[in-house]
Length: 160
Image (tube, rainbow, N blue to C red; front, side, top):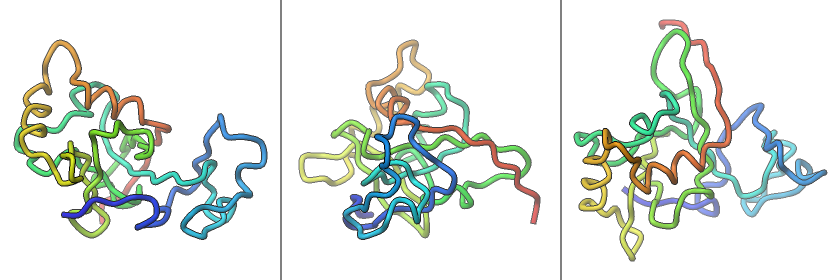
């Protein structure tokens, strides 16, 4: 797995999402990846958005102990698995705490996980985070993920 940043992957598909707090005219600016924001219909520069299904509960934004790669997310909302009505959370990875990184671990799949001082996945910190999934107080990483949510979508997917 490798960590990514906005400069290395550019912007993902984030159709119809806009930041309600964006500065006036922000949609016409350009990003470091060379894309025009207006072309991508994204309301803020340098945003790398990832998508996760689930409720807004702390448990849903905390990996399970069996999730050894981290909190499962997708680069495109169309890749979020499921059928019927699916609640999708939009996470701005630029708003995640510095202790968390995003790691590509499959075609269009990204895991949010703790990283060490070298930027690599910190397996021990991930175990501690996952162990706190049903704790009475959310783990600091869970609070960081919840704070990085910038949108909520409801998708309707038919069975293929």
